[in-house]
Length: 621
Image 1 (tube, one colour):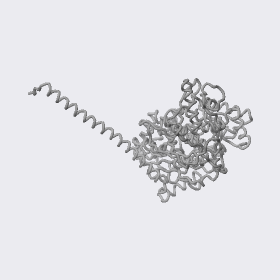
Image 2 (tube, helix red, strand yellow; image 1 turned 120 degrees about the horizontal axis):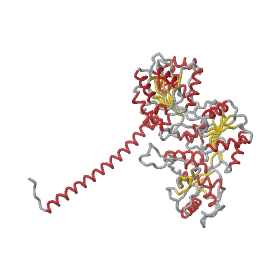
Image 3 (cartoon, helix red, strand yellow; image 1 turned 90 degrees about the vertical axis):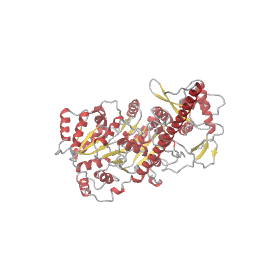
Image 4 (tube, helix red, strand yellow; image 1 turned 45 degrees about the vertical axis):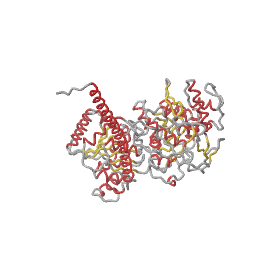
């Protein structure tokens, strides 16, 4: 029987239950919060553990100092087929690793010899090696080179005829096939069910020797060249258990490596890295003139004097710029041609071939040009605009000097270009990448090569540069730390004054208001005219952006994106002391403090965006 209670008893019991529920709910919240904290701690520990493993194992020494059953064979093929007397640095370690049935991630600079690693192993292995490569033009170059040395290779993609496709599919499942290498694009892997069906049959017949993923950094959303179709490559590890995978790249930070391992299921891969240093390349940053006509004069001067009769590339950021710059150079007698992705494929091929044959001295191109280009005598690569990341800059500039002879890598820097590049970012990863290139450009004394080595966490000694950058090649001027708090406060006044009028502040508007020239619309009263040149004024603004006192906000016009300057999260007031290093003498107070300021250049992410990151001490002195 149900116990009959009076009203007070009902209320007492209900209150007690509600209290118990509140207590349990509170305990649940505490447990959930604790689980979240433990999950974050776990992720940090896992990241640091993976980082430790990578750093301790990336040299691959154990794969060199040992004789394997195939050791004699690979040297025989190296000399007989590929016509090399010896392996380059890290090639042997990578070959021995993959022939031992290990997954391999190989980081090797442009022209380091990554292709030989998988081509040689494919030639001496039973079965078929699948090579995933991002560009059909690159694949065609590889096929031509392999044909010359008598290695059977083919490619299958959307342009392959039905008859050729049928032949290749039959060869994939033929135990007696002589086909050693089959090149495909990531898009073909993602979209062709027929190809994947035959690849499964190849595996089932034990004919799939290994899978190679070229430009493997494209797998990572943290890479400078992420491509969504690379996501589909994550199925390889589960579908083809026991088949070794090789990932190849010239540009990957530790964060990107860990992301690649997770995405492709290569947690136990042997990681081998060759030094990132290219000793024959001279790195230099120059101030870019504000007027286009002056930029053209500077380029013409370089190409007509120092680089007369020498081959090179000029990279810029838009299709229009490639055509405009090339046209201006031709007016000045320079044999130049533009190249971009909107051109017809046959036109692009013709331009590339005529440049390869030295009919054109220089190609003015977007980043659509260059991947896989094997022209050894490129004597200069000029970045006319700020690249989107240090990885992009390293890879693109690395197309110079593949013959080992001296070559120049010049970056023409202007803060306006940086703001435009920054305004085109679409997520916090890309924003962080632009900060790295800003640091590279603003740096006053530190070796350019050391900055690159630090970014890729490569071992570096100061003597490794051998005066092959603009900072190390000249006598260092003394650097002073200038207190720029006063001009920073004036710049804040201008920005806030503009905000009060609902006016967006571009760099030019900010500079003009600060230097008290031009339109007075956003010029507040009681600001001091700067005690420096406009060029130094831009450097100060750039430094404040780098230090995150200012941020870049994205804006749009009918024709382009615009970077507006706005206050950042860091506060500036009369008690703030902002020190800026400079070799140039400027009329602001010099600080005698030797305190090193810590700068975190990776901006904070949301939990959903958060990658494995770390705090870095950056030196802009």
